[in-house]
Image 1 (tube, helix red, strand yellow):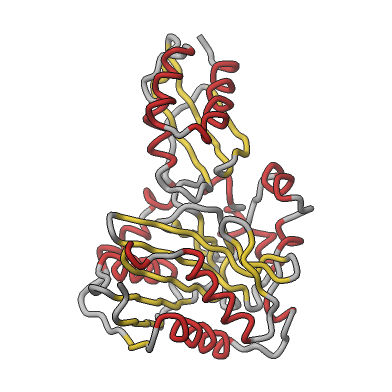
Image 2: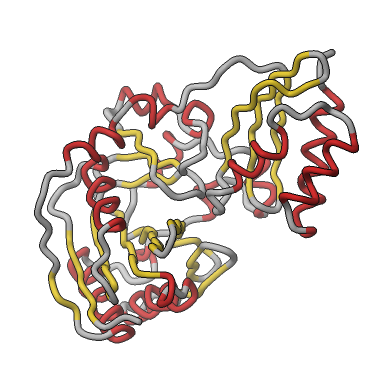
Length: 326
């Protein structure tokens, strides 16, 4: 149960520092508390934990424009962030974690600023049918993280220049392009300032959870920053592969690179924007070292996945089976 609410606003606009600070806060939540974190990242493409950086981004354009590439700890898709975007994070223990309640708190803040915000789908907030905020989630033991973005006045031309959103995802969501789907909240109220947005979010959190107290931290973040800034973590380089599976499933987009020898899967690399960060581990358990035959597949499938995921897993299996090289 939440007995005390804390907030912290980062003074840095470096994405690696802010990811490290969020990571530190997430792993050190005070007992019976909520921690609400606000930050901004300068000119950054932020990809989900299991995404392929080479596929999700126009890396050459980003390099030319000195745009940061960063990988967060949660699932979901790639987003562009600049100083027209505000990031928020809810951190608390499992017994108080309620995604709908947390998301509604953000909606309440936006409504107080004259934005006709509503919860939409699995992880979005929309206004008049346009996405103005996206959310992602992470749980580790009893620690829970819900973080998201609010597009205040993001440069959508840069978003289009840096993000490489697949045609499959655009078609699945019924939009012509990623830019046509999103809107800044200043398009609904041009007078909104960053300070007003920050204050509205803090007030909405206080209205929902109780008075907010500023949180100060001590100790070095250097090792955590190094982790988020490392080439290995950001690019997650792949091994060789034989078969490529790429499609859009109920859990999100999946790219799978499958190395097969003598009818047995030897190695898999995969990238996905699935909100469930555990999906990668489950897919490895399903397919790693599996001899490709229907009985082997079904035995693992029924052990690892609930029935509502069987159709998706069967579709992936058939794609591997169809294109495998003996």
